[in-house]
Length: 198
Image 1: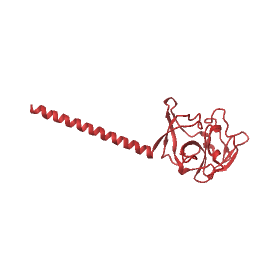
Image 2: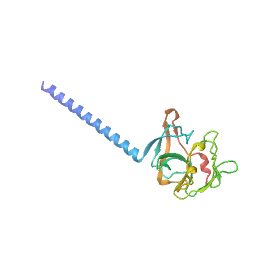
Image 3: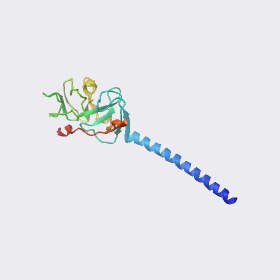
Image 4: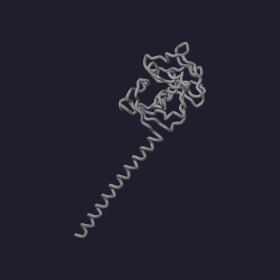
């Protein structure tokens, strides 16, 4: 009889220990997830048509917050023009770049190099309906949506104090993967056309 009680006591202690471990692991997991969300990876949903067809309304993307300085062609989430609202656009020009619309073939040029934007521009859309000729200040970015005729991007804010440019410091991170819906899962990469820009 004494042996049975002892065995029961050991069993209860194991159950208590297992429950404590489970709770501890759960709390630890939530803590790590919150730290990752705050400092490393963020999840953002797409609220508008401005990045179609690369990103559709209600698509969701993971953003790498530690990816380093944005480069031409990157898709970035940043604190935007509308009272610091989270916004997503494509980087067309970085500090020191001369971005012009458009050349004789209706291409945007960066430092005199025409961009072939067919791989990401909305089908049937054009590089820009507005002409512009800007030099991006150091530490700033010139950003445009992939659905140019439906995007309120740098072009739409040229008359404001910031000239349409966004500070690199306002960038939250680079979009690395479209993870929702699962059927549209996609790993982003910089379009080759930007490799030709000097």
